[in-house]
Image 1: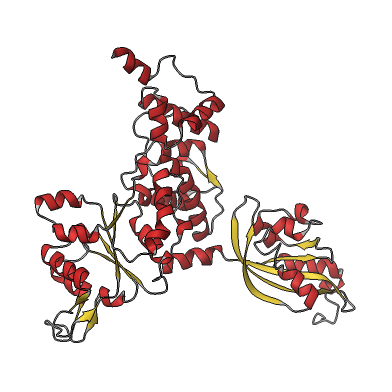
Image 2 (image 1 turned 90 degrees about the horizontal axis):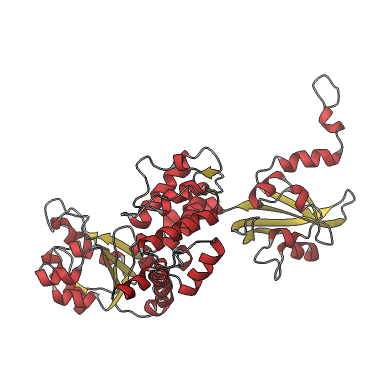
Length: 463
């Protein structure tokens, strides 16, 4: 290539290796090459950004030591290409970044040849699919057990039960405060069941006027009422073969309670204005934040419907009763919103964590989700600080002392719970949802000084 005046382009005068480096570093996808011994010979800037591993550290290392992919030890894509000469195109795999986090990537491979056309290794390009995966989840809302993040005993017990419950066709009632994630558990049940390939349809029973909820559930035929110019399927029809999630079933009007009971008993229903009886091949999962048993006693909820939907009951504890999950959820939401908003946020400061650990979350996990999204949007650095949190957020109860490390945060939190329980270690362990021996180890490790007389001893002495 020459300039218009006939002089050679200075770019062509550069050494071939420098031109190659300039090209691969300008590519937004990760690129790396390996020699016949699988040692990395090239590692571009995008590869550094995706993996969190510097080029200087990666060069000369075995590729499987850097990427730690789920296929490295079994069916290595680049090995396949070098041995067969056949390329791999857009293979979805997981690699592990410098923080130990698995990242979904799409990988393509080809032979790497010298000027004579002789194979001297392999070249691979990989595209970060995290943003696409998170957007896909937001659109399809197909959740799995892996999306229910908890180390709380009650939650882990529920997770252990889900596969067994999912295998049955029994109705399930999920109870818990608003924002605890009841729909997440319902979707997990659906995805684990034999109905997973069929629709999951959700409806909020309190989200429609009483006059409309019947048509939303059962549908209507053309001419059923003024303005019904054509038939419309209801949620039962849309969920055919799958799962119907009746959220806030405690808000269902009395007349609809009767009609829903009939569907559950006879497995049939009629659309509004219809004369044909339709079969209801759906599994019912209901949820509520109300005390249905108390409503039955008051006569505002049918007793027979209560027992029909309450075959299997899952009670989701509020977030304030499983505060050990807050750091895990914060980490998860930071990763989620860093990806969705295309920001590089690595964590949260101890001071900001102090505030979040001392808050009681009346809105539960949903509220924590919104708080972290707010912080991620406003955070100008790689670390969420206290001033990035919503202005209205402040610690409730006893304020923690300023902490300078994660261990100090844990120490201050345990001290606050000990004080709350009058230094009774057993009661504190129960509130923290950990074994008492685990609490003793933490007290010793964190250097927490205990009074000579705890709450339990004082009680015995007073008795």
